[in-house]
Amino acid sequence: MLPLPLPWLIVGVLVSLFGTYRVGHHYGWLERDGDMQIEIAKKNEEARVLEQTMTSKLTEQETKLRKAQDDVQKKQSAMHELARTGRLRLPTASCPQASQSAPAPAGDIQPVQPDASELERQTIAALIDIAAEGDKAITKLNACASAYQEVRRLINGNE
Image (cartoon, rainbow, N blue to C red):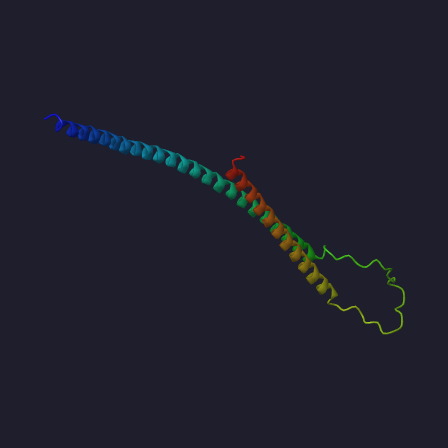
């Protein structure tokens, strides 16, 4: 009768060892999942903090950009006002001019047209607008580059 319980004993020991292994394996995975959830929560919190920091930096850059654009707009308005009042003029050619009392030379010379002043004002206004558009574009480019550098520093961890 001895040989019959020995195989059952061996099978029982093997089943209990396998069961112990499975239970330990199961609890090991549960512990690992808990650790991973804690790590994921920590990384999510770090990402939220980084996102808030980037958002605040970008908001600061946007505020600076708006202020700079407002300054350009004010400068443009002031320059237009100077042009309207006639205090802003285009430089004249450096050739010598005849005096007012000198007689007009004979020939086919066209008289100065009365709308030359208006043409000069339009030219000045166009130049002011072109310069203002250039200033706005440069300001936007600088703000974009600054924002990029700020975000790059934050993401790379070089605060």
